[in-house]
Image (cartoon, rainbow, N blue to C red):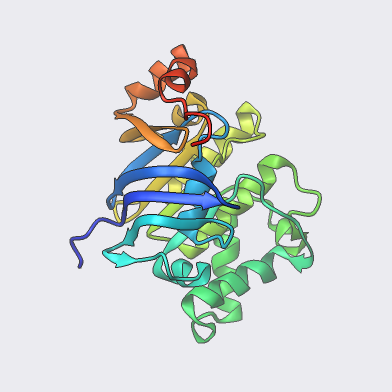
Length: 256
């Protein structure tokens, strides 16, 4: 179904360890669209991104996740990645003993097929992307995220995104832990990669990231439900008014 949306969530309910977190989410992302998902702590934003990516701790109890018209719920995370879905983590983990170059090469082989990733061509592509994103080439020799600052970790996530060239990019609080300069650098890297064939879902608490990555649509998630959707102006309203009114209006009854 070539005319199908990239991502379509239909009445999505998700629980973690028996507790319902998402309570009927509907969302559609098409090629070339940038969607921002905002909401207070504990609203279910990271649950949504992890569920789309197929994290085993998140159980879909009702509803559907469609990617280009194909149901994802039964697919493993690596199968979803091969379809063209990428998740940039809020807290990238360190991998001692594995260099960044080797990690990225293994990631590409998993997505493209080992026979399609030649060492010399990969190194040329890697160094070219690092130059474009302003990442010191010495980082390729370092262990993944070992001793990296918050900004360096996030830039390496964007480097992985650049090499994988996904159809759908999920950016889970990419601004978390970044100062203003690091935020701008990371956002500039993302903007270089966004193209008319890619859909993007940016998850954030704050308007400040959206000053750099301009969304077409903004959605507000509160207590596991999308309670508002609109254009970029909605993020400005949230910045001004906060989430307290929405939390009170959409409180979950005790025992629910």
